[in-house]
Amino acid sequence: MSDFETRLAEIIGRPSGQRPFVCRGKPASCSVWIVGYNAATTGGNWWRFWSTDHGFDLDAWRKDYDDERARRGKGPSATRLRIDR
Image (cartoon, rainbow, N blue to C red; front, side, top):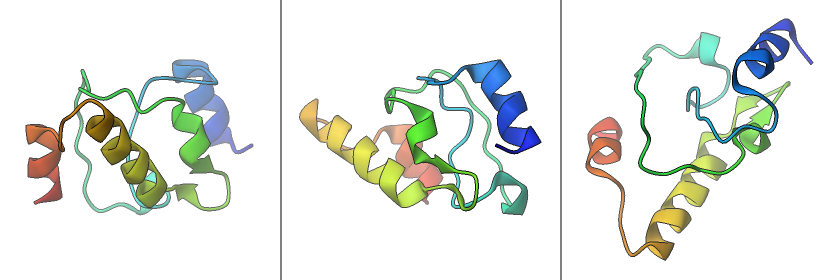
């Protein structure tokens, strides 16, 4: 586990229902950050989408997000649609 992961786990816990960020790969490689709080969808344990070698698996997370929303009879939230744009 990297120092980044250790420090993040100290903050959000492990497992964690929090969603500290969602990105494709490692956050340090991202050119855009959107910071927010009070997500409409929990997304389960955030750590199951994280890999030390590859970072965050956005595609797997998004599939689970869409599936959870569909089970609730909803599509993507208004905020998620704006982020997608």
